Image 1 (cartoon, helix red, strand yellow):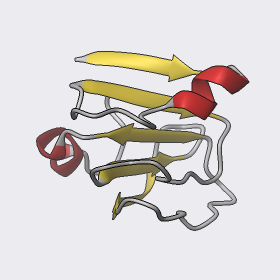
Image 2 (spheres, rainbow, N blue to C red):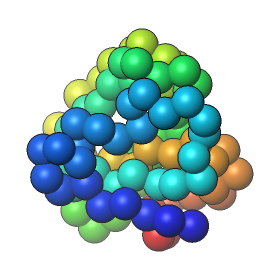
Image 3 (cartoon, rainbow, N blue to C red):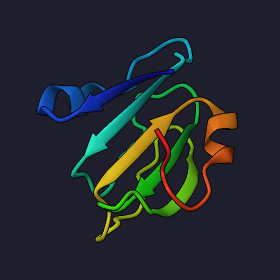
Image 4 (cartoon, rainbow, N blue to C red):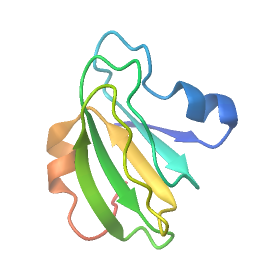
Length: 94
């Protein structure tokens, strides 16, 4: 499992946009409150967590959509791995 910590503007901007295949990688965005799936060809499995890594929400974001704004969010994990996404329950375990 490869986790890419996205802290800089360029890392956050790129994410999984324009990826033709579903890479086996996890993008962890620090300090973000929402995200989008513009220019995506497949759905994203998203986990939103607070500073203590408590999961606030889990959802599937279809291509060309914007997620809702999470005021208490600190971490947003986006992945294409549905099995990992399903296993996460109360705390984000990475």
